[in-house]
Length: 238
Image (tube, rainbow, N blue to C red; front, side, top):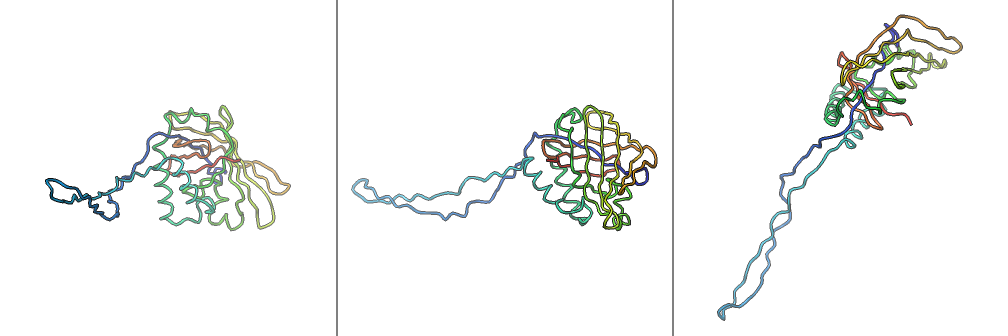
């Protein structure tokens, strides 16, 4: 989270509305049964044959809750997306795209964006945490948590905590001011990052800024899409 080392965490949001419907066109595998009902007409015995027919079509629904469960299961234990394969990243993007259909209008005005959130996924690993999350950075800094807090009306707090060299606890944090650009997009201008490692604590670098499109938010989950295409998944902290 610095200029070079501080590609920031970002924000996201949305809600629910349409439903995806999948109709099954397969007919029931129930066998056809014949029922014989004897009756008499004009003193002659006849038999009436009745046959059963197929069961009605089955309708399956996928709503936001199902999509959220699927999304969280795909990014679980992935170190924020680092360990996922290209194909798995595509699957995450597909589910996130489906979830966007349930986004409320003007998500930037939704009060659910406020609170503390874990950053559980980013399609570009270095976007949250900057150089600390790069290939080389991860050799020396093991990420413990990536957290974003949004305080009403316009304060954003990003923090990545880590263990350096296997024994030094530390974190890098950013504080920024949120500005609404339109009904979906926000901009955050961050102050220089602050680094803490052991007993050391200091600021370094310069201001930085990010722009994010809020694509979904509810009580549990937020999604955001960066101006360069990075997808972020945030889960509300308990």
